[in-house]
Length: 508
Image (cartoon, rainbow, N blue to C red; front, side):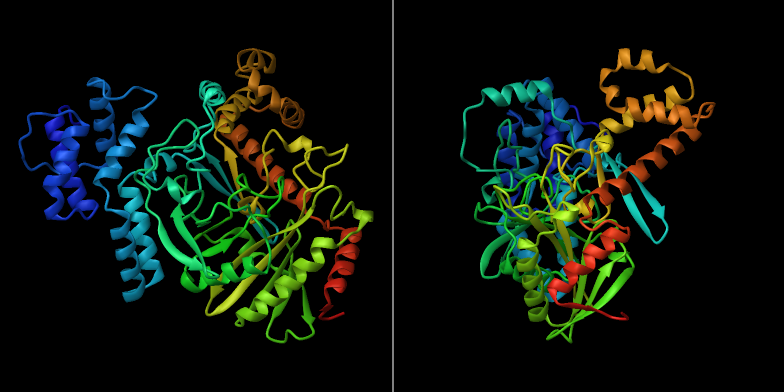
């Protein structure tokens, strides 16, 4: 039900806050008066309203704000977020309830409380997220997961132009900073009045956790250092990762590499990503197993996976931290020019992506070996998606993709609808390019598919062919990122490195 007047909307917001957001009866009058001021309502009368669903409530706020000229099309999101922040419980109360649930019940129950709260106060926009396309790509022995993300808006050219004219602001320093809690936002920093954060310590440092508003996978959390400090991977990183899964064994957690190309999109603020999702890499089979002197309590293996990944399992966190630190120290300076592996030139190139789970009191640590060096042949990265795959994915291959879950841009849905029309002859390639110039990035792919499938008539068949093409491309992108390729040469150089690490192959 869409609400048309301020009085009814305020009553509905109060009822919603009471039912969904733990509003205490003692705070109702106070909140009512805040909403009266925000919505410019001067003649108020209480009456009991039914609880609206969140989408109708948001639509009502937006329509009323635009009608009363309380917001414009450019400011309506911030206006709505401000109201949802007002009716949400205070951050201190959220932390109090979270840790009570953690203590009295379980980490899973505490996390589900925070997740439900962030859905109910529209920080996580579930109705948009449900629009995302998702499918599983099966291959012999492994699988990948692929999603076309429609919930995260693409950059707007007008917004970019405004951003260029905006004066530099140092508060908050970036979109991950703790100071975003309750922040009203600006052009390049979204409003965050309805975000709620959970505070804790990792390796005796102040950290906090928040849910990603875009939810790339189940209960996708971002774990963030309270200090605005650069990304890094060192022994302390492994201690922090272990501390996190000790607190939250219901979640995996991992760190992007601390270098561009092989890292995440934000390298100037230390953070991890985690969640409840079972990443495809977690079910990858073992290719080789190893022993290492002094680590009898560790099961060490190299995975039969598309990139280069070691897995270490142990009930002993000190062993996990120590062996990971040793591998990192060797990898950081390891060189093998025969396979284009150079650890340092004018900057560091070798890096790792560590990911950890805790299962039945055992730590499962994945160490993905990375290198971000570029060359004349591969200016975007030797161990990165090569140019022929950039129409599907050009951005950094970070933790999520390296684990087998590909987040592809929303533009692909629209573009691939056009591609299917070209493949079935509904429109010619030339006409489609004339109307939609951005389709040119797919021209080579379209011509290849036209050659392979010259007489397609069914739209469904065309869509299946395009999906198969995406699946294979994502697999090949991960294979590009592998340091040690899955061939005889790669296997030989891999074993040389593992010997350097002091790993003795079991079974010869």
